[in-house]
Length: 160
Picture 1 (cartoon, rainbow, N blue to C red):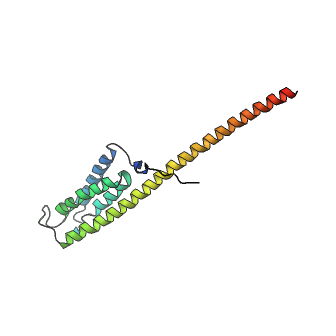
Picture 2: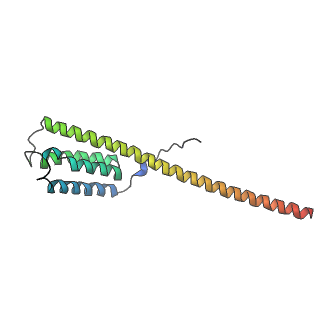
Picture 3: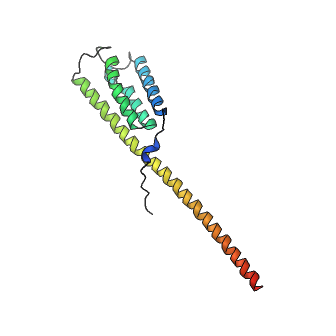
């Protein structure tokens, strides 16, 4: 059995403005949680909630929205949750390291999730095609049997 090549496997993600709403809501929740937990969470984890949000959005809406959120989340985290707070006075080695680490984590997770979602979508489409072919085969077989039955009855009536 040959595998079906699907060119529309990338259409697994929701269409319209729903992914944008998911992204904005996730960003607001991540910012709110990080802001509420700021006294308890170290400055080194300034991007943690944003990274988790990017990964969840990647699962729900696709990797493009996730990477867009990452681009917005990095300056937000650096401005609000890194010392000196509410100001960007330059980027030091620690900031560059944080940006690289979280970017690599989010990009890797997003790419893997996108690949798995496309494979899942392709499997669902192949299952639907297989079920349709099976139904057509059953209908064809029933029609053939009905035709054979009519021929058998007409030949039996002609002999008798």
